[in-house]
Amino acid sequence: MDLLPHPACGGAFASPVVPWSGWPGDPADASTPVATDPDDVRRLAASAADLAELEGRASVCRACPRLVSWREEVAVAKRRSFAAEPYWGRPMPGWGDPAAHLLVVGLAPAAHGGNRTGRIFTGDRSGDWIFAALHRAGLATRPHSLHAGDGQQLIGARIAAAVRCAPPGNAPTPAERDACAPWLDREVELLEPTLRGVLALGAFAWQAALSAARRRGWRVPRPAPRFGHGAEVSLARPDGAPVRLVGSYHVSQQNTFTGKLTEAMLDAAIAAAARPTLS
Image (cartoon, rainbow, N blue to C red; front, side, top):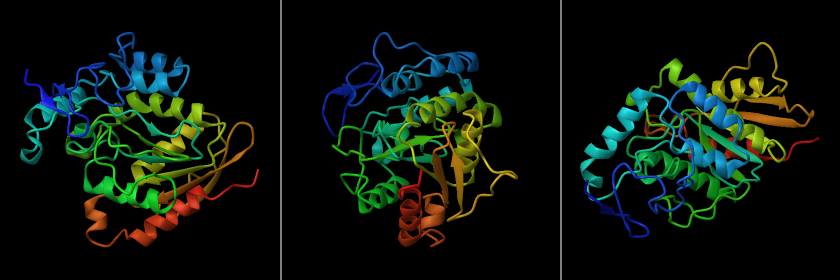
């Protein structure tokens, strides 16, 4: 197996990256248990003591055979422009401030973005948009996120995907969505003490956020709130504290290149989701 240098920190890595082999920010270690089916995911997510343990367990998950095969196939075949880089090729754990007041939820990692770089929304044009916007809002220390190990940090914010592996055609199946849901559920639960806002990038993330809220016992309006750019809905945690859910068009090139989503629109959605709530 060929080993290639990491573009940010050096070192030599296989594609996909072997857990605990020194990749910057790898949350897994030799003791991290591996989920091999949906029952394992439910058990290991629910029993994660904190976000660090949850990240490690999510990062080595192998519960969905189709997604495992695809993410690793992409990591071996690569895109020509990244042929000299190692690919992460593993699930994408949530990333950011462990005491975040804002959670940004996306659909899934990009095959040649996060699946390559080892950080969600990093290394592609979608990531360029969301990190630049978070930086303008004072929630990220840098306007770009190029690779795990590049020094980027989030302040008061965290990013997670509803589905943790890059799916073929960017389209996970309902079974894959459901198998992955416990990772997001536990992430939301661990963030509850500080969480005040959720930004859902696209309709898939909007539904995932609402479903996670219901499973956590949050108060969710009925009928179910409909997704739209700028849509806002007030949710309530089990302790009664409010959490604002805000929708935004996804930061995909289909939306940003056509002008369906502009920087001003994204900035406004982030500002709405991040503004303080009244307890």
